[in-house]
Amino acid sequence: MSDAVVVAGLHKRYGDVHAVRGVDFTVAHGEIFALLGRNGAGKTTTMEILEGFRDRDSGRVEVLGLDPGERATGRALRERIGLVLQDVAVEPYLTVRETVARNAGYYPAPRDTDEVIALVGLAGLEKQKVRALSGGQRRRLDLALGVIGDPALLFLDEPTTGFDPNARRNAWQLIRKLRETGTTVLLTTHYMEEAQRLADRVAVIADGLIVAEGTPATLGGRDTATTRIRFALPPGTTVADLPVDAAADEGGLFTVESTEPTATLHLLTGWALRHDTVLNALTVDRPSLEDVYLRLTAPRETVPEGSAR
Image 1 (cartoon, helix red, strand yellow):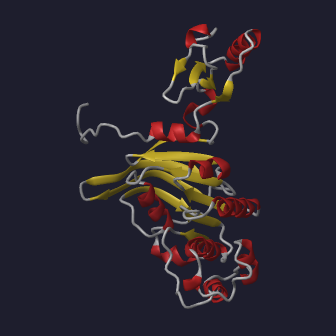
Image 2: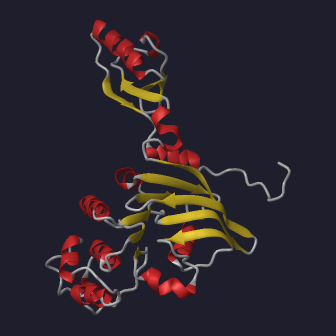
Image 3: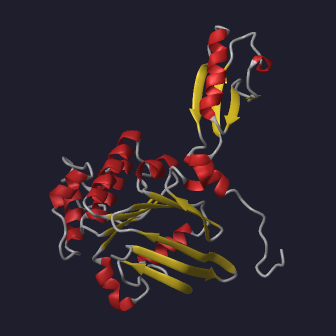
């Protein structure tokens, strides 16, 4: 079976601005794929091309085997995808149930309205008018409208913006359930924890190009990166007393970087036990997904196209 999404050599210009400059990636059926990038990196343009809202200049794009830029198959594609955009226009004087039921009528084989309302956590609010919903409840309604058509592919653009931590985790559970039933999900988010918890694979776009792709655990070499061991020392103990090289930070913690964390920890904790010293606030980690993302998307010096540099 072909991939759910295929993007190859995608280009898009806005006048002199080359917003997308040869983007390539694929999304497998039944996968949660996160496209990450700073504002202005080309992420939104890429998503809008995939959703059929914007024409491309060149390159190959397939969504569920169809070209989203082909008007002749536009309706067939829309019936098979779901969209949860950052801003969704909803009639404020309709009730929750009326809103979801109306959108269900746009699809040939929608999910049950009450089932979807319960699925997104709006059970009991069926008769509540949209204008009376809180921001988080409105966002849950957006999710309901995105999944009511039982889409094969769901586009999620910042789906949990405005959610409190409990609501965000409930939304993550919903997205996982959709994946378990075969729905493919293409996600954008600025919450790195969200990408870490949800995505099977992640791609980072910067300056109109994909600069890294992989699983959240391996992106940018996270799985092989230097391990950081951090801890606090009791009063009277200095970095010179330690059996390993360490650097102090402004917060009063010490950091040891190692490519062999097991051996380094053995040295450090053995020394602490022999000297009856407690290593308070001890943590062991590799660079987080956010650390890698910030490194990959750090602003670079702009070089004009055609430059010899």
